[in-house]
Each structure stands twice: as C-alpha cells, then as structure tokens.
Length: 296
Image (spheres, rainbow, N blue to C red):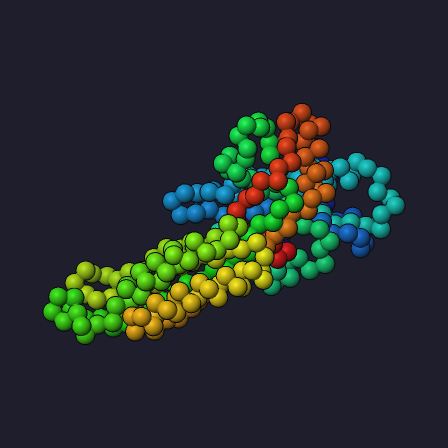
C-alpha cells in the first residue's frame, strides 16, 4: 500500500518490516529536514481466539493509517519552511490483548525521542449514553492500571475414591481463592475490578488434582491504589494455599499503567468531527478497561 503511495505521490516513505525485534511489527516514516518534532501514530492490531477483533483493533489500525497519511499530506501542502524539520511515523503495534506488545516496543526503543504519540480507540455502545445520538468521545477520565497474574498451586495426586486422604487437592486451593476474591469484591471501590478464570483444574475426576491454576486481572484507577488492591488479592491466593496445604507460585504478565486521556486533544477531536458534519459529544462517562499503550 505505502509502496504505491510513495510511487504515485512522490512521497519519501521509509518502510521497515519486522521492526524492534518483533516479527509482526512494522514502521513507516516520513521525514522532512533534520531534527524537529517526532509524531507517532500507533496502528494497533490484535484479536482474541474465537472472537476476533473484540476491542476494535481493526478500527484502530485503519484510523491510524488514515491519520498518518492525512498528516503527511497536510504538512506537504502547508508552508513548513519555518520548521527545522519534522518526522511523522506510523508504528504497527501488535499483541495488545494481554501480550503487552507496546511494552516490548518500549524496551526495544521504538518510542525513544518521540514527542507525541496518538491513537484512537473505539468503545462499545454500552459505554455511551444511548439517549444522546451520535459519536461519543471519551473525556479526561483515565483507563485503569492493570496487574496481570497467573497463580499456580501444587499439591499431590491420589486416587479420589481409593485414598483421597493421601492427596493434597490443588483444585480446592483454586476454588478457595476464587471464592475468597468473590467475597472481597464487596469491599473494593466501585472504580476497581478483579476478575479471572480457572485455567487448569485437573485432568480426571477420579484423581485428586496435584496441580491447578488461575489467571487473574486486577485493575484500579492508578498504580498506587492498584498496588494496595493487589496486596489484598494476594492474601486471598496465599490464604487458599495455607488452608489446603498447597504450594503457591506467582507469574506476573505484562502489567499496564493507567492511561490519562489528553483533554485538549479530545476537545479538538470532538470539534473537528462536528465541523465535518458529525453529531459528536465529548463524554465524561467512565470506560473500564486497560491498555498497553499507557506506558508510551
């Protein structure tokens, strides 16, 4: 696509594939002059097994591509002779759905020297006020910080009918932890979320499970309150191990910081859509989710 654009419009796009040690990442850059500001658009893409583009990643990617092309062509059409130079970059960012793709890109230096990084993210209709028709743009509220954890319990197997007393039931530890966390939810803030699944509960009903595991997300509006909530959730995990006699191990997975929306940019985005004829509302309704892009 960009090879064709570069040829037909004589624009000097620099196209790089498999960038920053990720086979599914790419980078397309347009540079004019030396130095100056660097603007990046995140073209985010990912999907969930059996669901597909559950969070609208296909829309994010196409929106960023359109914004990147429009920005380059607008700058080309304007008199930018007073600028020392500028760089506009489209960065393909894979594996947002738990994979922490942007965290890997950060570690590899993809955002080093970047002055601004932009991306739009769609939300479901359920997050909007259905009494107000039109496009809703999220206001200055934040997206949640998120700790992701896999919890592994180890006990010992035994025949469930012949000698169950000889086993240490790892599934019991998982169930106990799950119930404890469900009870904890009554005492957490309305802005916080704790949710998870049983990833492994044993193999056969006639064998006391010697291993079992959970996969949990713990979310809160900021990192400080998230750490406090995480400590409370960990007590549920550890208490289950103590009660059942199991060993417990924790595996951290790509923790995400909170994301603060930029209010002036949201306001400008809203006004621009209105000027294009769309009924657009700057909404202050909360959107409960997390993004790996918060750290960028």
